[in-house]
Length: 229
Image (cartoon, rainbow, N blue to C red; front, side, top):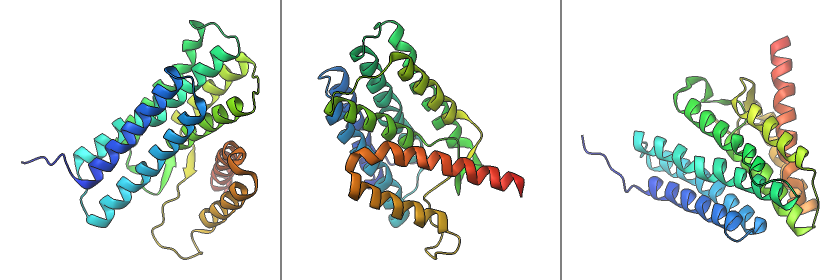
């Protein structure tokens, strides 16, 4: 069997990977958390596009599926952990103790490995998706550096632990995947997207971490309601 490596979706996935690498370099090499945010945001766009193009061209492959997770591990696992580490150091934390925040990268790896073999995540996610987790932390890093905000090091570690638990938990979280585009059956998706767009338009990038928190809370509420019914 001939394995095709250089397909259009795979090339887009590699762009995701390279954007993630650029984000890590921006953080650890240049201490620039604002550019790190933009690189991870670009990685998220490429992450959406590779799947979209694969569906459009019907060029799914086992290689593409594995490559996607490998790229996501860098862009949405290592990059946000690097941002947390940089924030820990900038706020007076010990460099050696700061390594604990890389538990986020470890749990991202577990999350991605589970996703590849879990057949229950075709219409919803089980646990927090890594792109959402990454966008929360890189947007926080962007805002902290831009507005010179100081953070307690214990709060940084606590955030790393809480989001690590969310990544690997068994809580269902709604996915922005549309099997059809009617309002009925997509009510939560459309309302969430509309509210997110309005928030970004009004508040700019300040809205990003709040949108992610809202996504988590809505998912938890929907899961609770579903379990009670």
